[in-house]
Image (spheres, helix red, strand yellow):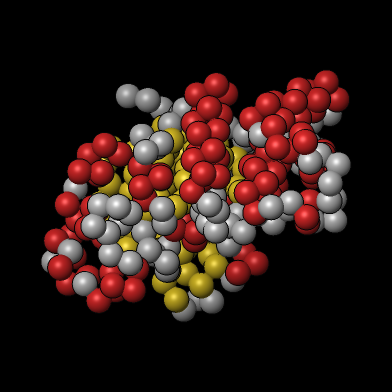
Length: 265
């Protein structure tokens, strides 16, 4: 059995000491694996990523139960910076690049975890190899890049830390289908060529299940289904409620048809 780079066990997350957002979630990302967290808005997907990366604090969230292990080490008491040094990096939803800096300056800003300039140069060239558009726009102001280019930059900036585990929150959000295909194709390359494990949060279940090996479906803060991606793509409930182009309902309709989901019966 493949060793888990990330093991989450029975995690609960509470906001403001009142609202229980995540309710006993367990999941694993095998070393070298690609795993997706699927679900509608408010399911708890982004909260789970922030629990793993240690970014709940600014949003007054707290892990009140369970354990989170990175390569076998308990990281719950470690801050975000310490988790980055252990090889975990989180690309937040909304890209959040340094808009006043150039792409090249954005990449260099993320390289401070390395003292070897040669290593920094190698990582930068690797990013440009994955995303040639960034090389072409490397001296432009990042705030003037397109949405797709900013998403490439956000991923590239994460790669400058030489991560072992990459957390991605809605990388396809607001992007044209062609750009989504390009970015997801590069995520597969990054996984295969560098052995970087990936935990991907996505509402676009179709795109996610085409590239990941395993997926978990979250609803109301709980895992309601999990399995290999090819198995989930054939599941009638997944097809009906989540897969675009396979008779999927929009998320407004999902809320009104929950009683029909067999896993909620």
